[in-house]
Image 1: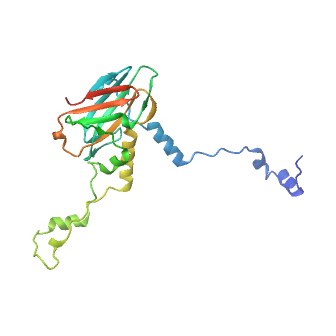
Image 2: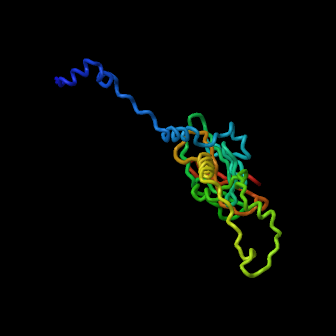
Length: 234
């Protein structure tokens, strides 16, 4: 049996310690970072289109259907559309019978451009991030911009004149904006692992040329469902 000291008994009688003894311990509330993480998990992934016919093309692979659309250098996400000069993008969707699941991997997909013998593998996101650009972002206006617009453009040559100065580096997008852009692309990329169908996401393939130079595109699938080739620009 627990024994209380005379001081404790006096405090209990006065009602000063009663709340600490009778109230149950409160559960700790979720931290803001945990709430943000849960929200990201809920919204992660690109919603699949209603049917395979809503994509540019589709092909049957056993009991599954692979659908896709070639997006060029545009990187569309549910939140914003950005560009990549170094990669072209395919939006793919995988469909199956009710309750079907399929194991997906980044290496399941490759892209053959202009009929080349060697197909381009699906690139890791870590490489894609460095090439992303937001076409709507404009650097802030500075006083240097005004001085450049008022300059005469004449140089005297020699003597450390302006002609010897190197052009300034292009301004960089603020870290917060770039991080948000990368997160949008990460959430829109095709997820890996065993997934319930339908499942959709973006695939990235290295290509630094102009879109006008692309005459044929074939998405090649070789994964758990089987093997298939889908013509996206025959």
